[in-house]
Image (cartoon, rainbow, N blue to C red; front, top):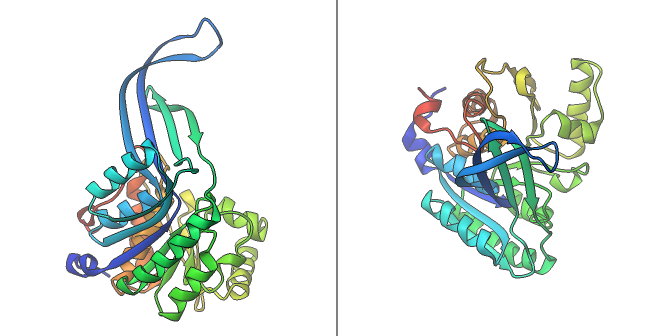
Length: 309
C-alpha cells in the first residue's frame, strides 16, 4: 500500500518524551597512550545531532509529516544548542526548562569509523516541571492526529498515564517506545514497540515462537493495548494484535550502525497512522525504514523518497 506525500504532509504527530543532544567527536587514532593501554584520539571534527525523542520527531519530519515536540530540558548550553538544531528541521518545539536539570548529552568519540567511547551527562527533572508540561499537552493534543511517547527512562514521562487517558478520550492513536520493567503505566495505548531485550524484561524469556505469541498476547490483553510491535533486529518485526500476529522479515542489507533504528521505526509508524493508515499496513513501511537507517552512521533519518522509492 503506497501512501502519497500529500497524505503524509497533512499528518500531524505530537512527540512527547526525553530528548538528548548527540555529540560526535571524530579523530585520528595513530598511537597508544604511554599513560594507559588506550588509544590516543586526535580530534579533527565535531558534530551535533538531535537524539532521543528529538530524533524521533526529526524522523517523522524527514518523512514529510508535521511534527511537534514537547519535552523538559535544562536551562543550559546543551538545551539551547539542541533547540536550535531541532528548530532548523521545521519541528515545532515546546521546551519546558528547569535550571536544576542537566540536559542529557551523549558524547561519542569516534576513531577509524568506529565508536571508541561514549560519555553520558544527565540527571532527572523535578515533578513540578513535568506537571507544567501536562497543561501544555492538553493544549496541543486536539491539534494533532497521533501522539507518540518516546520514553528513554530519564523522567520526562512521569505523568504519562494521565496523558494517555486524555489522548484515549479524544480517540487519538497512541504509540509508545517503552522503557523499564513496568509497562502498567502504558495501559490503554494503541501500540507499544519494545525490542527483544526490552520485552524480555517484562514478560521473561520465551522458549519458542508459540511461547512468545502467548506471552505477547497476554501482555496486550492485560494492558488493554490494541497491539504490541516487537522489533527483532535481524529477525524483522512481529505485530501482535486482535487478529493474531503479522510478521515481516528484516530487509536484507549491510548493517552499519543500529543507533536510533527504533526511533525511525516508531516515527514511521506514527506518521503513517496519523495519515490514516492501519498498523498492519504501516508495518512493512516501518520495517523498510528501519532497514534503510541501519545502513547509515549514527542517529539518522529516512526521507519519503527513500522509503517509497
